[in-house]
Length: 426
Ligand code: UDX
Image (cartoon, rainbow, N blue to C red; front, top):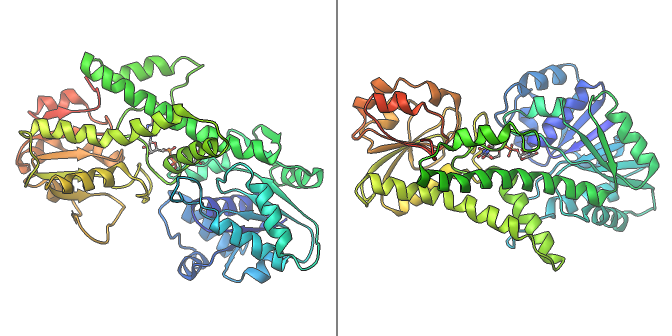
C-alpha cells in the first residue's frame, strides 16, 4: 500500500519505518525543512537506539521517502497517518492546531478515496472533528474514512515496541476502512482490538494514565516506606509478582516525565471536566508526581545544613529517562530550576543531551562532580550504575549521593564512606 505519514517525530518516523519494513511504500511529510533534509540523508534528528540503521536501509532501498510537499504527497497516497504533535494547551487540554491544519490540507488536496488515521494521542471525539474539518475543506465531496489507531511505543525502545506491540487498536466506523487497516497490520502477531473511534481514543488516554497512576502509587507508598525504614524496591517486587498487578511501572524515583504521561493525564482530567464529571484519582496522580522533586530538595537541604545557597550540586542525567535525548517535562530540569531558585550552583552531565545554555555542562562525570557538595542521579542511564565511586569520592567537596532512580547498591557506596539517600531504598 502507499502510506503517507504526516509528522516525522518519534511516532511518525518509527511508524513509517515499520510499514516500510512490512513491505509498504512510505512517504514521510513534515513542514520542518531541517528534519526532512536530515531524514532524506538517512540521519535521525533525534536519538533513538536502532532506528537510524533501519532509516538508512529504507532510504537506500527507496521504500521510504521524505518530502515537504503536502499536495503531491496527499494525492499520491491511499492511507494517511496523522502523527503530528498534540501539545498541552493552556487549560491542560490537548492542542489540536496541527491536527486541524493537516485535516484541512487533506480535504483540500485529496483526489480519491482515502483512509485517514489518527495516530497522535488525541481527545475523545477527535475522529469526528477530523471528519468535519476534512469535509469542510473539500471542494468536491470525495469519500473518505477516519480511523483512530493509537500508538503505544515508548521512547528509548520505540523500534522494539512498534515491531512487537501488545495489541493493535483500530477504532473505525466503516467496514471498508477497518478491512484496509487489518490488511496493513496483517503481519503483526498480536491481538487486534476492533472498536469505534471514541473508545479507541479513550483506550490510549486510559492506558497512559493508568501507568502514570502506578508510578504515582509506588512513589507515594515510598514516602510511607521511607518513614517506616522499608525498602520500597522489595515492596515493588513483592507486589509485581502478583499477575494481577504485574512488575512494570512500579519503580519508585523522581516520577514520570516525557512527552506523553504529563500531557495525557492532564488532558484526560480535562476531558472529564468538560463532560461535567471528575477524575479525582488522576488529579492526585499529578499532585504526587509534581511533589517528588520538591521532596528531594528537602532531603538535600537537611543533608547540607538547611540552606543550598552557594552549595555545588552535580546533576547526573537530563533526559526524562534513559536511552532518549528528550528532556520534555524531565524531572531533572524541574529539579535544576528549583536548585537555582535556592541559589545553589548547578553542574550537569548527560551522556546524550546537550543543553544550549546554562547550567554549566561537563563532558565527563569526573569534571561534573568536582567540588560538589552533593550529586543527584536524575536519569537511569546505565552508565551511572557502573561508576567508579572510589575514584569519584575524593573529587567531591562532600560525599553525598542522592539516588533519584534507586539505581545504586547502597551497601557498596556506603561502604566507601558516602552518605547515600535513595527513594525509600533502605
Ligand atoms: C509512554 C508510554 O509508556 C507509551 O506507551 C506511550 O506511547 C508514550 O508514553 P514514554 O513516555 O516514552 O512512553 O516512556 P515510559 O517508559 O513509559 O516512561 C515514562 C516516564 O515514567 C519516564 O519519566 C520514566 O522514568 C518514568 N517511570 C517509568 C518511572 O518513574 N517508574 C517506572 O516504573 C516506569
